[in-house]
Image (tube, rainbow, N blue to C red; front, top):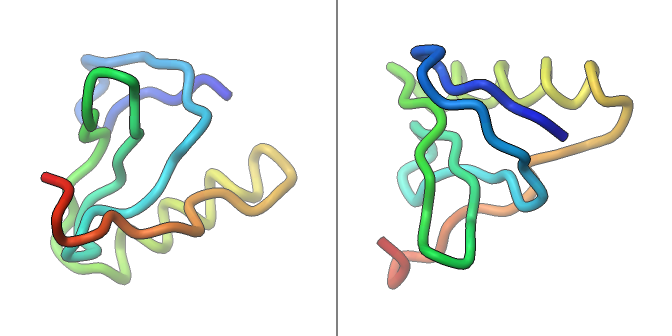
Length: 71
């Protein structure tokens, strides 16, 4: 699915969308690292945005959270 970043500057095709380690961010894991697509005030806001994305595409996305050793 194509996703635009929170600030609108990045448009990327996402296959592995998830939450940052602290739960405040939405990230895409790529071959070259991690692309931060959004950074929110609370983990609840990030989850709300991820829920809206899930509703838009018709299936659950963002079910994983980055492990602590990946930065």
